[in-house]
Length: 419
Ligand code: AMP
Ligand code: GLY
Image (cartoon, rainbow, N blue to C red):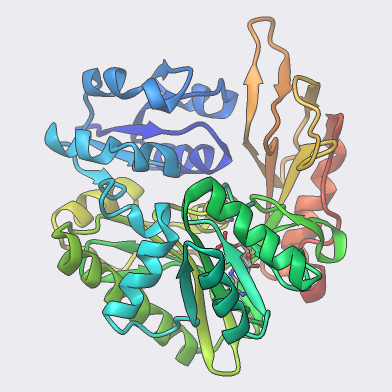
């Protein structure tokens, strides 16, 4: 019997999920808030909503054998809760369990309470006095973080974004006046990496590690973005990450899903994503997400040999098996609108004539009735190249960019330090 999967979300990450499902002959019903031509083309049925905020009514009417929720917004709105009530196995945690992403304070306090490794020193502050003492305690070498979702753009770090003591204090105060609370955290230095895992609430099966490039411009200059590109290596590790580090990461992830269960009673069914920094004391956890990364989903899903539908069913049966990934390197280059992230040009036409040796993931684009493809204010296309090495993978990704025209730009140095 052919399985039908409901796919929620309309970016490049969800296009990657759709491709993985389609490869295994799974029928796709999609619930989208942007007219992503890649997802529409792979779906047998498409439901369009103007916003996921008011998409729940439509969601209740859709039936499927399983469901995969891509973005954090529908997770935070309880899409998984609704589908579970309908008896549909879901890849994606309930809104309570998704607090591991939607509240950074919750995530930090959970790690503290359950003594989970990799926790930086942090203070939760709601007054100027508390902020001042936290800053003194950490010698003004800090990351200032809002509690809630900000699309990767709310965290500011001493040195990178905040130069003077006044700037640090004022940014923390501005978050308190907006949200009533702010996290003042020890600044960690080291190389970042992404560990995404599948979890059935007990086990965490770590996928190939990914390095992503968050800054807007070459040489890691400019503001943080949702990410401008990402790479993985053929051995599924990174040159600066050892097997011992990986063991520690797996332990952190498994202790975290266990802590969520103990704390909220919710079994974590979904992707647990850890953004880590490798320090002299081992990996430190920067943040958790309750979903695949974007672009990191493209790297790992391109290599996934096991059926994503089977993984979803195994997770919901609490019987997760080790998934298989091809031993290849990948490189994703994100094409973004000119001016992104500060003043992106949205509504500009683009043309896409892909070369055969790269995979084009449609991101935040809209397909108009006349067939024109228009940019939005978010990232436009994720271009993925494969290879036996990162060098080969990045050459394939970059060489296919010549087939893409419009008021767009990209970083030219994704993976260059390893090629
Ligand atoms: P987040 O939204 O928590 O992923 O933070 C965005 C970026 O801010 C991260 O990818 C890091 O580059 C940086 N960052 C977050 N927390 C810290 C920290 N404690 N120390 C240094 N940099 C951090
Ligand atoms: N690449 C970062 C994220 O998906 O949050």
